[in-house]
Length: 280
Image (cartoon, rainbow, N blue to C red; front, side, top):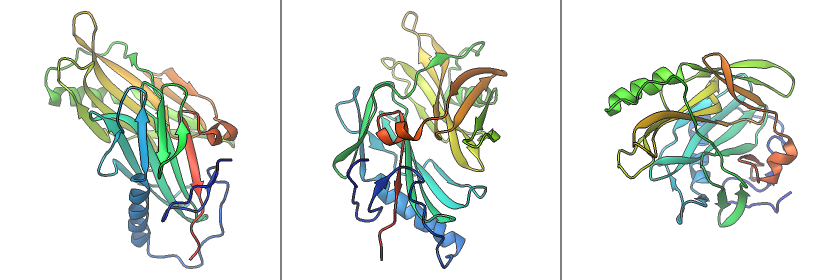
């Protein structure tokens, strides 16, 4: 187990996700107060991370606002916010930071690299995560239409292509869950510069409730030969359970359950940290 991190507000111990569940709070604050408290806490913690990739000589930029605010009543009273780190506007790392109020009281941070090169993260100056491989790999979308010339047309195409995907998970108890696609990208990014390898992109998400479980990236990439763009996709987990992604009813991406030991190594492209609250 790594040496404990001691941030000023977020936590006193760095532990494996869900390993330090505490007794339910004696008094339940108003739900809205919990939502806003979780937002302030997670935003503060997000600013304490510094992300870098092998492909960039400077720190990634933290998007100024959460790209998704979520809860999951099926699992408990839990409120989370998703933060994005980018390079040139393009997604490189995504983090879901969330606070439990019931049946637990701890806080968790989970991350996935969205970079095509290895990535490292520091928390208050100390390295806590370093991947040994790229976080995503892009593949061509079969039978995709030619990339539209204008941004509005490309957004319509991305939404249509995203609807052809479906996703499901099997949790550690063997329960099968169909995930729901949010119809709009939670983050949209363009780069029409001719020297770039991509023209446009959107980050979509499959959720349980509104809790992010699987990320879908759709990008229009320029070809190396004729500079013509084509639609590509990549996927990334946001849970350690068994996850599958289908396109036109054919499985195109699958990840097995990720062992707790792999998560706690903080070397995988997906990782998570659990935090006990500071005592009063």
